[in-house]
Image: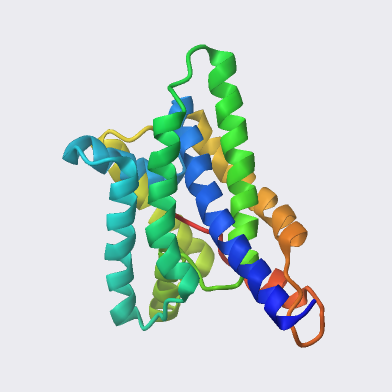
Length: 217
């Protein structure tokens, strides 16, 4: 693949992944069975402020980016695009997809949302344009404190879930299923969507880079 073709593919993956991430998160909202950790917080803030969940997601993402400054993290194109695209895609999907009624419909939306979210994660991370704002927060705190990535990530997600739930965000079986499924799904889709680096044509770099982190909106 030529350099131009590789760049085009990476850009398409970046924005397709971000749009799909927002859309899949909206499906989880419509299922009513529980959201991924950060969106529990976003939904809770949306309930309290009257803003749409997509707008809250964008504002929180921008605020998290400000925290990158003292943590000495550097945003990439993917980082900035993450803040701008996911919230818009999520709000647009919420306009188009009504609330589900009946357990079968709700479970269908839940499963579709989780699987598509895994695909979106693979698309976005494999494009290699930089981490999402929440991932940068995680790695920055890891570097600052010396605490393991696993513990930092767990601490952040428990904090945002607890805060979001207290504010009125939806925590349920979907939250647990998402936590269990997103890692394996992302790993599968990272392999599917890996873009061979220009130097050797190998997918090793694309696969190794995101091992420590999963995309957060």
